[in-house]
Amino acid sequence: MSGLVLVSSPDGLLVVDKPAGMTSHDVVARARRTLGTRKVGHAGTLDPMATGVLILGVGRATRLLTYVVGTDKVYRATIRLGQSTITDDAEGEVTFEKAAGDVTGIESALAGMTGEMDQVPSAVSAIKIKGVRSYHRVRQGEQVELPARRVHIRRIDVLAIRRETDVTDVDVEVECSSGTYIRAIARDLGAALDVGGHLTALRRTRVGNFTIDEASDDLIPVSAALERLMPLRHIDADQARVVAHGGPLPPVGQPGPYGVVGPDGAVLAVFSERDGRARPEIVLVGGS
Image 1 (cartoon, rainbow, N blue to C red):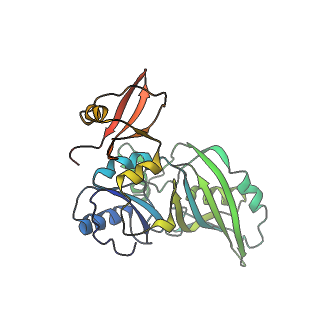
Image 2: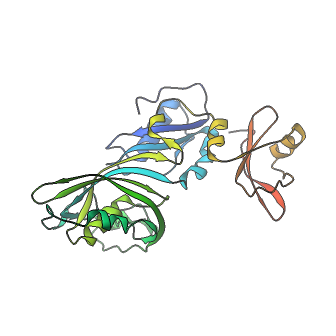
Image 3: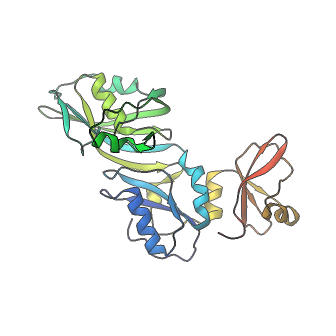
């Protein structure tokens, strides 16, 4: 994120390279001030220590963020073996240590952590327990046990292994479904090897098909953003008037979601089909 200069269009998606030390909310607040609008949101948080791709929605495009949140992610991370921490990352106090300079079986243990699985999220997370975020409970001294969640880790590639006397650092690239905790992978690797583990660096390089190379101060227009998120359906002027009032369309046998585009190329809505009818999920025409 080089400065978030004011751009000409008030609507669109913004690919930000979040710096370390900022929360996702900090980035949103900065964008609101710079762009002069309250209508800014983000598609999935990054921990303050993490860097990389954070997708912001501005204006009407905030309504598209729901279609970004659930997309796959790619991360680059460094796992330190030989120490566990209360937060499963470098920001928490060390709770366990064991010499791991000569630990073996790293690649095979990581290979066993790919595919569909039930992953227990890190206790220090934003998941709410009876209305209170888990990290608040942990920091107040509570013992928190979160239920496992189904995730899909498509691959964990080992990029480098660096050994010291007492610890071993492992650089990895992870491609995974939304909702996967990379800190939990570090924790579980350390547990599998019986030496403890935590995350020391994390960088998100891709969200869906939006990559870190696209990070800039320029908004991706709603039409271009929608085309990258889902298929498009082009309709005529009469149908466009129906859609503008929230009405249905004849089905075309495409479950959706899909974007609906008018004869002038304007993005009108997002539709899905069920029970033999095509109905709007969101309508984007009219006021923002």
